[in-house]
Image 1 (cartoon, one colour):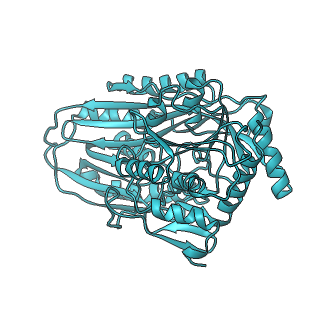
Image 2: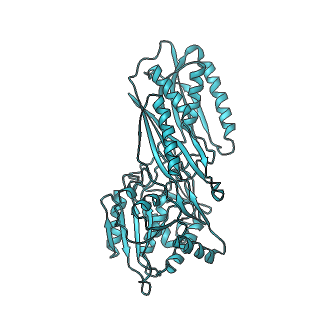
Image 3: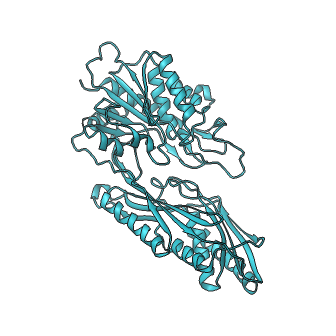
Length: 484
């Protein structure tokens, strides 16, 4: 199979064009220009709001004018992650794709199918003249991945339809009708560096090769968190021998489980060989602990050049906080039918040490807003006790299931008609823009679905090719049968 044989061809053609356009979160200007020009070249009403969201309206095909307007929505930005040894500039370079069996993959980077494939489906519909549908509003939001600021900045009235299909889900055959709310916590430790005690020995320890993944969808899959793992070792050494921390860096994105990290620290010269031995024992135990989910972990320890270190009290409190802060699943959903779904979680997403500060970022999620408040307060309290400055964003709301949803009923019925089986209707432990839309457009009847993706937010991101055609056919059947 080669790229030209992929079906539906019109969708994959659009996706190939999109992947030529750099579109990192917060730097979507080239994609905005592309979408604006696309709409205008097709003679369609095209709007760009103050935030940079793009809306392209397409009139109904003859005979479908009385049908309800359907909003199709996806986000134009992508997570920019690459392998350490890959030379790639996400602000300039085109994504390089290849086919591996039934999967479409990228060469050493994220694929951009989250949510480029949703954008491609919308553009294929806008480009087509042989598809039956009522009035369409195709919406492309910006900066979904690093703060949902596109959806947050959208003003009421920009969209006018009553039915919305979000094309940003990652499991074909699943129709999502609710999502988690979320909030980010940033804790900053400030200090003046000082010389390490005389005669102390510096070591550099690192880990890489973890699976990583989405901090919502993958938080319950027992994947290792590189930042928390290195924190465990620092705490062990601190308690056993004492140490002076010089650097701790790991993770990049608030919504990704950190895959790698580096620590630099000093210990008494008399303890250095025992610390090396402890590292070997520790890493062997960690590999055993994660032997089911992690198969490519790489650990290293080596001597390091002397450097200025954090004050002892700050270093101690930082390491204690990193050991103490909650990471992973905090609670599962209480409803029997959703008992498999994570309700509340926290992801220790990144740490970065600079000359005079260390910044830690965490991401809290919950489908229950009071539980989200509690989890965010718990994380905040840990860092407050450690003496850090703590700032928390307003976050984004959860999207609650609508029991009388006309659109959910239509999506289920058309799926059964096409494929002879029931889809799974469920909620997701991740943030969808539907949560923000539900606040500004409380009348909206919404569902979310999409083709199967794996390894999102990591260089392992891949798209299951046959599911794109399934989603495409399902969407066309919904549009054909939309009520008046």
